[in-house]
Image (cartoon, rainbow, N blue to C red; front, side, top):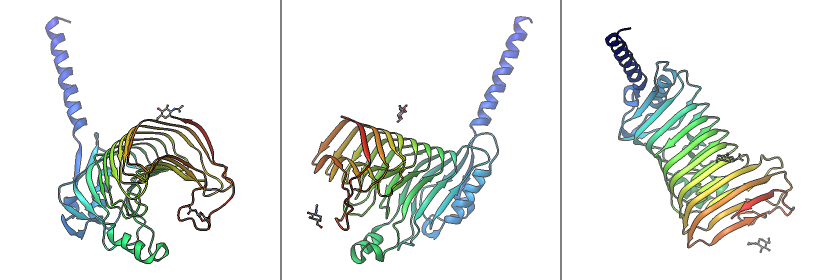
Length: 334
Ligand SMILES: *[C@@H]1O[C@H](CO)[C@@H](O)[C@H](O)[C@H]1NC(C)=O
Ligand SMILES: *[C@@H]1O[C@H](CO)[C@@H](O)[C@H](O)[C@H]1NC(C)=O
């Protein structure tokens, strides 16, 4: 082939690949506003959010589909974003604030992603408006109130990234990762009062390969809690306080529980918390095991119990079990 024609062929090839790249990069966007959302903080936008999600989830075009939530306040009564998605990856790009219904409606899970693979949730504020619920807990006691609503739940999912989320005043746990693998929660802010009950920041259960990186968590319960079946968890760069610290457990409440294994907690700072690093299990016969926990590069200031391993966990000290815990603790480093 003469040199000039070779160059032309090369040029054509380059142009073709540029066009392909551009097509691939172009995400199809589905704005919740086009599905009826009204950013007035009063109109229930649950249907609109689900409409946009269903469209993005069904999008089979090349390139990722995006659900877009523009700036503004959206009341969302509850939303369960289900997969699997036909076209694969979906991003949910949130510039606005989602408001939970108030007074509390008694839903256990507010915003849920389930059975999804390859979803990223970028930005956004979730305001759980838990104040009325906490007042119920304070005034009426636990049994008089419905279960606490958890703000964000990732359930039965894989390859999920939650980036840049702000979670305010969840009535219960702020972010739950359950029955999932390959989940990263990065650049997160969690904020609730130090006396708000059971408002854990990030809660991990029956999940593996979970990363929590770069988070500022102030709340009324554990900043991060890892319970049965948590494995290959990496926690780095968390500032915790107020709160109850970074906890493994509670464990051993029921006889058959999956192990907690390979937990790395690194470069964390705790200030003004009740506990620092804690492992807690009930004094009940059970087959639990905690194996391979590493805490390193931890700074604590004004922490009541910096390191605590409690095998007689019994908050409230009422009807406490007295069996010897069988939850075994192994390979505790640092
Ligand atoms: C422990 O978990 C980390 C991720 O947090 C992973 O990179 C590492 O391979 C795991 N180690 C073992 C022995 O499975
Ligand atoms: C828990 O209650 C028992 C008696 O019911 C009491 O002896 C014990 O001191 C209490 N422990 C705490 C930490 O309050």
